[in-house]
Image: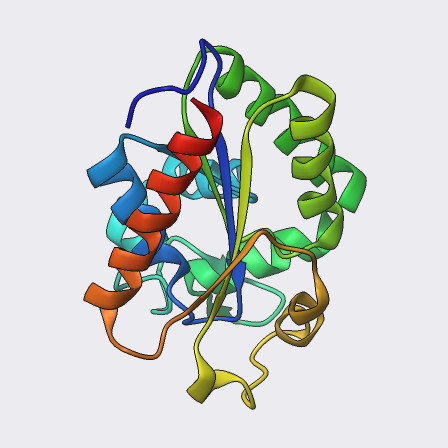
Length: 195
């Protein structure tokens, strides 16, 4: 995807667990040249520094207990997902907002198109809106919905995020190819609107 201006473009993906955020993020990276940032990237970086690989941090092994993540107070190994969750709970919202704002602005100023994957705090979504308005970066917020998961609340975040503001709601109910086709149409419309 071409940059709309000399500066980058920001797409924010959010929604319930298993709604399709990671699938959409990977598609934006692979097919449209976006660079992704996770709202907890600094915590993921800690895991990489401990020697975990991509599949352990973000892939199929992220929910499996890992010997490098032994919690002596609980007397057991944590999964990378559990480690990340524990670190998020001990990190203040202000720290998350400051770190993510700084990182987003650095990337956008370099002309990178950025996909911000799965902010779990409303303050982070508000920060993305503020960055877009204050610095005039194009922004597309996408709320991903998967109807069969609507009654399942896996995180406190899941029920709260349903009321957050968004530009576009993508319903993941007809399979991955349909979801990605809808995403492609949204990105094309954004290119045309902002060119």
